[in-house]
Structures are given as structure tokens and as C-alpha cells.
View 1 (cartoon, helix red, strand yellow):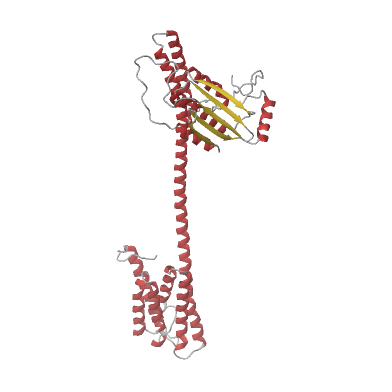
View 2: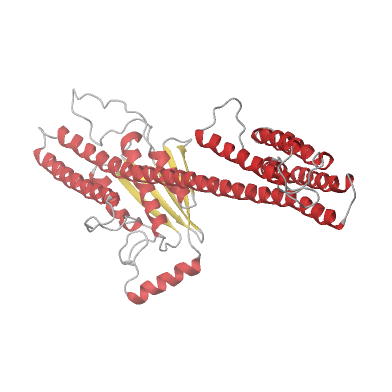
Length: 440
């Protein structure tokens, strides 16, 4: 382990390990001093004790100054032959330890290799530099030269191993962070999707219920029959709103909960029902179709329906008019949904004037209808434009992509073989006795 802190107190276990390393190196140095040049054993001389003590005293600084410790222990190893001692790997143990430490802590591999090679060459060159040179000196020189290289190679391998483990841990941390961020992103997307779906449902149904309740309140005294009719329609609207809300909230049920049957996602096949609901609320809606209608993918079908629903809801709430127009333009690669009105842009008023003395509806903050429509169109690869018309009123135009004609034709053929071919707009069988593109 490399210690880079200055003045920090080391743990007790580190001190014990350092003490053990210094003690073992001192014992090895003394054992090396026991061996004499004439291959006899004798008590370690005073020079061997000095070399062992000084070189081992340098070892504790190898963590903070590994290059200086390596240079000091190498210089002490070079002084062994001039002092009449036998240079062996045992007496050069402190130099081997510092060579390992420097290979472990060097900034670059080139520096580590250069320092270890210089240490090996200096120790090996000190053998024949003093006294006669024999074949025994040659073998001893080779052994002394190899051991620093082995220590440096071992330090380099340990360093690579630690770097590999650190990289693995870092990748694991990055993967954990990426998983967390991906989970948060998906949760945010799901929250936006559910909020958009609930907004479309609640805004549409509550707008219709508000219009029906306003009509009922206006005719309460003068026309009881009309009041009862409006109240019946209000009950139907709220019941339908509760059903759709229950089906949407059911998407939040966890896996394993009791499954409840839910009706299919709405599409352009339910456009007549949507138009009829606005008609009951006092908004006359005309539908026009250009081109040849064909089946839509589920996502595009739902998007087209929700855009028409939200646009008509905005007309009923804010346009101040009793009529709106829906147009569907079919081409080979897209369907264009257009909703227009001639309103004044003020909050919606019922077709019949309110009762005398009734307080006007308070101003409300802007909602998320246009934002939701744009998000829906973008999610399926289309785009939406909305704004005021120069001649008055408001215009919403959504261009949604269609699958290739070949795929659609194949699907239509399969549907025809299985039964009746549904109309892409009304969902029913083509009557063949009305104008093309007109809704019932």
C-alpha cells in the first residue's frame, strides 16, 4: 500500500507490519554478513551490523520517498564488497524491498523499469570492481543482478492488479449510478405519461359535466324537462369518466394483483362517440375526411384520438363558440388531424345565455393541454402546431406518421378474410350510401 498523507497517524496494524518488515530485513542482512568471502561462516562483523542497521533504517520512508529509499539502499549495497563482505541477495534484502516499493509507486512504468535496472546494474557491477574476479564471482553477480529485477517485476504485477481491481470497482460504481439514473428517468417518463393520460380524461369529462350542469341550472325553473334531460346526461358523463379513470388507474396496479378487465385504448373508431358527447354539451362538431382512411398503429391511433379530444375540450372551455370543425387528411405516409374554431378565445359559454344574476366563471390558470398534445405527437414521430388564426379562432394541426402502404394493405387483407373491414374513423361497416369522408 502506498501512503501519500503527510502527518496523518497510521493505523496500529500498519505499524506492526512495518516493524515486521524491518525486523525480517535486518535478520537477512545479518545472515548475509555471516557468510565470508572464502565460503566459511563466522560471526557477523561490525561492518555487517552497520550495513544492516543503516539500510533497514531507510525502509520506513520507502512509502513517502520510494526513489530516495531505493537510491540509499542501493548505495549501501554497493559498499558491501569494499568492506570485505560477501554481496548476496540476503545482505541486499533492503535494496530488493525498496525496488519492489518503487515499482509499486512509480508514476510511469518507464521510470520504474529504469530505476530497477540501474539498481540491478550497480549491485552486479560492485562484485568485480573490488578484488579478484573468478567464476564464483560471475555466478554471484548474476544472482545479485536477477533479484532486483524479480522484485521490480513483482511490484509491477501487484500494481497492475490493484489498478485492475480499482477499474472494476469504478465500473461497478458507474453501472450502479447509470442504473439509478435510468430508473429515475423511466419513472419520470412514466409519471409524465400517466399525468398526460389523466389530464386528457379528466379535462374532457369534467368540461362536459360542467357544461351539462350549467344548462341544467339555467333551465331549472323555466323548463323542468330540459333540466331532467341535462341531469341524466350529467350522470352518464360522470359514470363514463369514472370508468375511464378506473381503467387508467388500473395501469398502476402491481404485478400479481388481481387483474380487472379493461376496455381497449380509445382510437379514431370511437370518434363518433366523442363527437356525440360534445353535442350533448352544446358544442356542434363537424367532421370531414380527405383521402383513403386505413388502420393505424395503436400508438398513433390513441394519439390522434387524444389530440382531437383535447382540442375540442379547449374549444368548449375557452373558445366562446358553439361550433368546431375536425378534419382528417390521409396520405401515403401520414395522417393530418386539424381542429379549428371561430371563437373569440374567451372562456367558453353555454349555447344558452346564463341565468340573470349568475356570477361569471372565475379565471383559471393555464393548463397542460397543448403541452400534452405536443408530447403525444412527438412520442409517435410526428409534430403538432397550435395557434390563433388570422381570421379569428384557434387552429390545432397534428401530422402523425403512418406505416408503409404495403404493411397496411396486408393487415387490411387479413381483416377482410376474417370478417368485416372496419372503417378507420367510425369503427363500423362502411354504409356506402353517404358522402365519402363525412361522419354520421
